[in-house]
Length: 231
Image 1 (cartoon, rainbow, N blue to C red):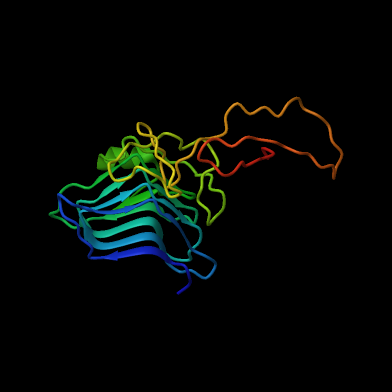
Image 2 (image 1 turned 135 degrees about the horizontal axis):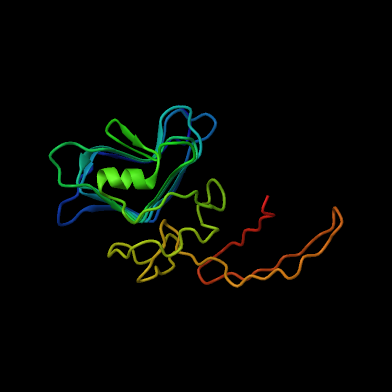
């Protein structure tokens, strides 16, 4: 029960070794106060699929949750994705079926706001180093809270994930149609450049209720500036 609880459901979807299926450049935000189990992408017994440059946020669920759930199947590639779970569930839950070629996962941001970022079979992993050391994948991946513009608008507002991806032949533009960096694309569906060379001038004292105007220039491909008091 509850909506939205699943962003994309794949049930027994299979590509081919020479022509895999591709899920790419999606903003997927799931979960609200009524959601029980929440999955950004829920792939059931699906094989030879590529999950590339998706931005996934699980915001709330009272039961099980994962940004990317691979339930059975195998021979899947997970590259350049933001798999963020703000509900205490897993970023990645990987339960392959025996007999398929090796799973491949790298250049992702796998994040959970509580403890385990990932699960494989019955084993859970609390850090990216523990996960990559055990499974052998995600050697170039990170685990950091992504600064999304909002819980449903998954454009990025910080430099943490800038230029951390790897080029893929499937994805040359981002979700907005902006061209990907050809050598160091960004992780997630949004190709962006963080604000640089920003100077707010000297510190000053203002009275409570006084309006303060802050100006900042946007870089190419970007839409938002995000200001913080640092508190």
